[in-house]
Image (cartoon, rainbow, N blue to C red; front, side):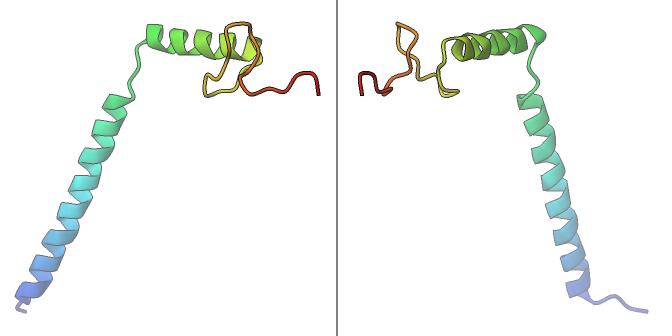
Length: 73
């Protein structure tokens, strides 16, 4: 039985897309591989922001209040 050339090209395309997805996923995992010290620093920063009542985006003023909060209403 002869395989049509377009089937071979289609199969090669599917294999290429799958291989590209694997490479992208591997690169993403390596990019997100934080050291334990980096994780500790991120957690400490989040804790400090939460303790000051700030928002997760780091929108905290020097006096501990979140910027844009209304006082005296």
